[in-house]
Image (tube, rainbow, N blue to C red; front, side, top):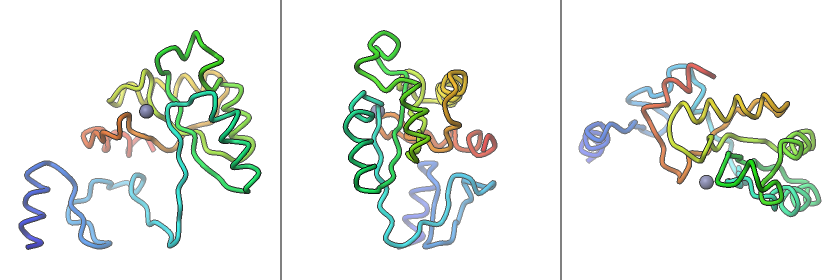
Length: 151
Ligand SMILES: [Zn+2]
């Protein structure tokens, strides 16, 4: 049965994992796939609406929890500063211990929008983003080798 499942995954071009063993290594640099600690809960928030700064961050801080705010240059990001997290707010949340993650430029799929969002945040003095939330949770496995090589 396992061989059938692995064959189907391979036919679809998807990475195949067997327990902690990797049948096909999609992350030869060890950047994308890391061991997950027991009892870990990951709190993530995507699209960067202003409420991540005004509501989410204060609640997490009050509860002593961390979290990742995934930001993107989405819709009216440049014109409606009251709708989206600003660069100043990203910097402040990062300083408060929250992670600022990449949700791509224009909420678009692909390596270039990922790198463009990173460049934009860094150009505004924001933190280096080391994690990615794929827009619409659609993982583009073809980008993984380039992302892994980028670090
Ligand atoms: Zn999104």
